[in-house]
Image 1 (cartoon, rainbow, N blue to C red):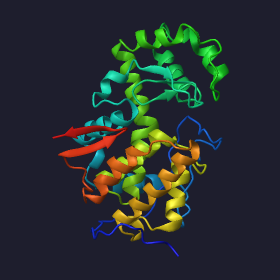
Image 2: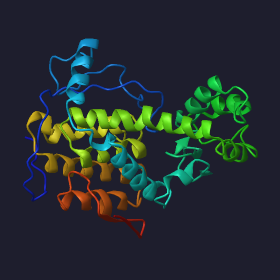
Image 3: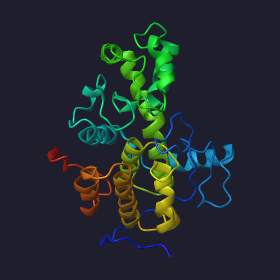
Image 4: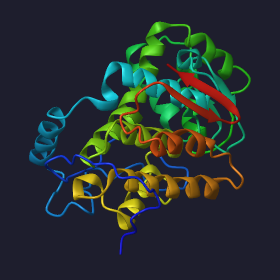
Length: 302
């Protein structure tokens, strides 16, 4: 029996006409060793859908008929600001293009506007793609080392020059554009698309996006897709007739547990005093003004 959730609210969810949801391709890997995503896997809770081109076209038509939600320019800007408050302790997300450090989480160097990592393949994929269009860039000479350390926390062949080279390359607009494109391709667009297919509004789309950023697009128990499947075992999505706020409450419960599983004692305030607060306030449209706390800091958007 699927639990109803502990959220004592009574929101009305508008479900889209189709209940289908399938995963998009992306490079990348999950820290728990699971594959990044199924290549064209239909949701286990969408009987009869096989991820075919026809099914995708039908999903595209359905999504096109919906409001833009988090993909609206002002909402997308807001999403980057909220994520940056948790990832970089700032609302100025554009200041993070040149960011790079090893934060000791076992993923090697974390860098750039969305936290690409040398240990999780997405940083390597970014530099490879960027080098194809800009072969003389300052990071290209580190590609052999990036391939060697991919999937580990090692710095072999990267120290001492790679961090400085990253920061210098980030002064070029072309590299900033490349970071934005990979952020959207790997994290933002798939998360928003799947949230819409699941019948979620703007807040739900953001909750999926932030989970994709933090947990990575993995199918294991601590990866984004694994968390979604675990949630669906306990609650129907709005597109399946479930109640939106209750579904999101359960998703956040499971996500919080997964964060603590990955690292005991980890600060979960990006859920507890940010996303959960928006949800309990009934702000399913993620409309400003917003006030939230992350890591003890208070942030406001008017």
